[in-house]
Image 1 (cartoon, helix red, strand yellow):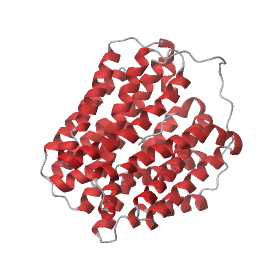
Image 2 (cartoon, rainbow, N blue to C red; image 1 turned 45 degrees about the vertical axis):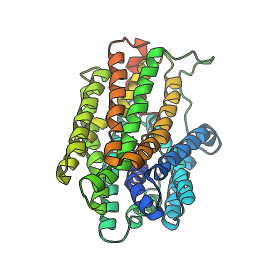
Image 3 (cartoon, rainbow, N blue to C red; image 1 turned 90 degrees about the vertical axis):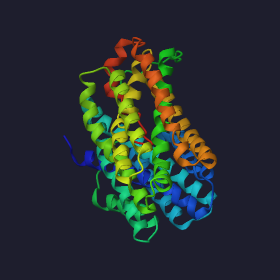
Image 4 (cartoon, rainbow, N blue to C red; image 1 turned 60 degrees about the vertical axis):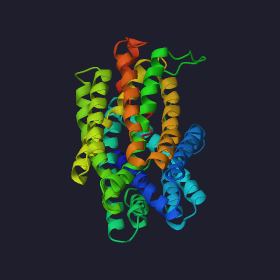
Length: 400
């Protein structure tokens, strides 16, 4: 049942998605303002990773000390403060600091809303979290369009991304719903954790690779469209919405496919769709054709992260909580390393050639998942619980 609490969680996650998906295409515009290299500009992705790590590390203590309601609303407040800081600041150290603060707040929003929905809906928790992520993708799709429209109108990127402030204020005024405290998790087992199976690290490797794909595309697609396809800055920024639109459709369809086929097989197919869309985008010189490629790529990207999480849990050897905690490092590596590597390469060979790194990441993921497809899960009994856990620990670049 979608009651007022459920809609509040959906809305809070959607506000974070608006900022996250809007900030990615802003990075090339910040580079123009700050007159930095692409490698230096990509440090904003690293700042996001640092903020996410700090937010994740503080999460258990924050929930115990202040509760989930404080965590989520303070997280949104940090996103709003980070947005104000970005609006007012121009030096690189300042924009990096504000990006890290916003990411730290977003970490609390993502994890807090997922935990509330899981407790509130019980057995239907995973379904509600999946639906929340679909709503977030739909709202996030609007952000690059708003930023691009503001740039095209000569107003710069700030008014478009600044919509985040209005959304936070609107939520605080319109949806006054009490957020319940955390409940103790059932079935908690004491004892030192065992080493995770070798097969788990194949799923972990896939998560690093697919996370890198999404971050590189989110941060550098606009730059490639500007330099290769001759797209105006405002239009190039708005074009990122094509990826997010594809992800929205893919999340709706992907959940149904997993009910009929093995998650690893569905993920292999999704990687193939992403590769086809990326190839079309990379080869196209006509802007409209490049945007079609981006939409197809987003269609495949939609299920990379949730299915990667499901495989990690299924191959956890009966330790799903430990598996989910380790996947946080995979996402942080993707956030901090991949965009910086692409930016550094782009400074030498140009963004169009450098973004071929995305194809390499897709190949790494496909190799890892193919090996998983040939192996039985480390613990079959965990697979049955994977659907309940697949979204609970997710913090996506989406979403991711």
